[in-house]
Structures are given as structure tokens and as C-alpha cells.
Image (cartoon, rainbow, N blue to C red; front, side):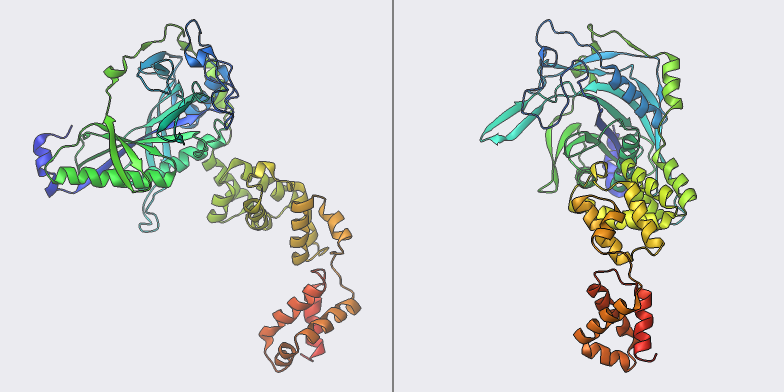
Length: 495
């Protein structure tokens, strides 16, 4: 708590924002944490339930071992110490979507403690000397999710869907090391990327696979004493987290500068109004009446099992960026785009390895491939065009078999209808044409269609060459050799 005298002086000091984040991550399992019910998102309400996740008398929980494996992988990826023994407890509270009246979680003996995440400086464009920041992780523990309250299905009533009750989560609790909303967003983006690369979660915020609570407090700058915090909930995007933290920071500053004191509350973010409002008084640990779950023994992890997972961790995002920079000589901005998801990075590297030119592959993947994804599939994992076919198409462009313009047409056909680039090029008449007779015919047609441009070009307006060559290329449906067309055009007008 801020001492009363510090509160009274707050208006005369610059006030510092202090933030710690609690990130709830749904683990990528097919079944729930303590029963065999499906975790599929979007199934009809209350269909993925059983006596165990409904908390019916006599039903006993059985721990999902795959959830433990995923939790360990996440903890090791952020440099946590995974403990050989952790304990499941009952966290008691009443809420309509918690049918048992308690949540199975971990308390004083969690799965892992003491990790860290490094984030890039958020003000590097302003201060080039800014360095990466290390955000400490206090703990990671395993728990089950609650159900979901739906307030928009029936007028004046709340509906309860218990499909999500019992879904396995990890909660990643940071230390209060964040000093701005921008840092909080940077930390979340970095953590999300790590979890995605570890393949422990789909980290889809829209489906609730990643949810964030922010612990926010304000203290005089330079103080090392933690002030009274509030917990802000109901944020469904990283931008919402930033805005909510800023709103709560402004609210707490106003309270302190008016001579008041901050009280422990759970605050709800209202995105439409851009404000936070109190939901309830914040509970303390004694309110939850934690005690070891009598139906679950302590979780004991042999050191060999922990070490095996440590030795076989997938490549982390930062390591992959460094390796791709060395292997393909790409700009940092290109690498940032290409490593935005592990699936996209895999796709790019498959194209680059087969084609042999990393920059050419990067340009095509960031251009044509991402544009096609945006217009249709969106998920690179389900993209119809194989990396091998993109690499073959790039080989054909490089080797002069087809023009770049024809290559784009071939790719569009591959996206729409499937097929290989060689088959499409042959079938659609898109192989590069170098025959002078055909080229002159297309060039003559272009000049007839653009007499004024041809006249101005002949008079010395060389910039119109692109217009005339482009028109001839259009006549050829992209198959004409543009360099030879330029030579023939110059010859035509004695240039």
C-alpha cells in the first residue's frame, strides 16, 4: 500500500505506472484437463460435458498427461524452473459458470517459477540507444477453465455454456516489471509468439484461447514500494489491453492527485466507451479457501522427463529470426513478416531452399502468397499451393521460361484451380515468346491502339516506352519477352 503521507504528496510528484500481467493460455489438447470431454471450439452449447466437468457427486478427476507435457514445454521456453513436485488445489468461489463451486488450480506449489521474457525496446525509433528489456515471470501453473456466461442470447437473461468448463489452461504470471501500456503489448506479442512456436496453444484471442488480466498500480517515480493495485479484465485484443491500462492509469492518477487512495478492485474494460468501471471488491487469497484437492495426488515429474523436454524444445522465434537472417540475407523487416507465425516461416523456408534465392522467395511469399491468403484461405497451413510449386514457378521466371507477368497469372490459376506451373503455362499459352514475328505483331497492335502515345514517344518522350510495352504485353497475355519488345520498339523508331 502507498503510505498516507505518500498519497498526500502524490500530486507533487511524477507518477509512475506499474503493470504485471496474468495471461491465461488454453493448451492445445483434444480433451479437457480432468476428463475425456472434447475441447472443440464452436460445438453446440452444453454438449461437451460429463459428470466430472459438471461437478456431479461421485465423479473423480483424472489428469490429462498431454496437458502437463504442453505446460512443461511452455515453462521451459520462457526459462522457468519446472519443479519436480507441484500440487493441485481447490480455489473456492461461487459463479454461475463454475458448476463445482471451485476451480482446480495450483497455488503455493505451482508447476514452474522464475522465468523471463525479453522484449524489444518500445521507443527504439526515438532512442537508438534503448536496449532490450527483460520481463520476469513469477510463476506458471496449470488449472482448468470455467464455463462461459452469455449475456446476448436472450433478452434480460444470462445463458450458461459449460463446454469450456474443465478445458486445460496455464496461467503465466509476470512480475510487475512493465512500465507502460506499449511495453505490456510488446510483452504479450512476444509471449504469444513463443507459445505459438512451441505449439502449446493456438493463442486465438477471438476464441478465448489467450486471455489477459492486467494488474495496474501507480506510485511516485523513483519509489521501490509497490502501491495498491487493481485488476483489469474483459480485454479481447492487445490494443484493448493497451487502452485499458492507459484508462486505469489515468483513473488512478486522478484519484491520487485529488488526495484519495486506490482500493483493491476488479475493474472491467468498456471498449465502446474507452473507460474502466468497478465490478467488485478484489478478493484476497484467504477468500478462496485454498486447500489441496483430495482427489488428485501431487504432480511428480521425474528429472529425466523435464530434461528430455528441455533438450527437444522447438526453435524459439528469436533464434529462428537470427538463423534466417544469416541463411537468407534478408532485411529485418522481411524477417519480421516471414516469422510472424511458425507455419508461414516453414512455408517460406521450403520455397527458399528449393528455389535457392532467399530474397526472391521472400518477395513472392510476402507479396503474392500473403495477398492470396488475405483474399481467401487466410491460414497458410491450409493453403492450396504447395511450396514446391511456388519454387518451381520462381525457377521458370528466373530461367526465362515465363515472364514475371505471366508468372502472376500462373500463380492466380494455381490458387483458383490447382495444377503445376509447367502444366498451366503450357495449357494457357503463357510460355515466354521470343519469336520476332509474333512480337512485332503485338507491338504493331499496341501502337495502333495508342497512336498519341506512339507519336509522343517518337518525338522523344522516352517515359512512354513503359506504356507501349505494357500494351504489347497485354496483347500477348503476358507471354511476350519484354526486353526483346523494348529492343524492337527502339528499332521501329530508330532510337
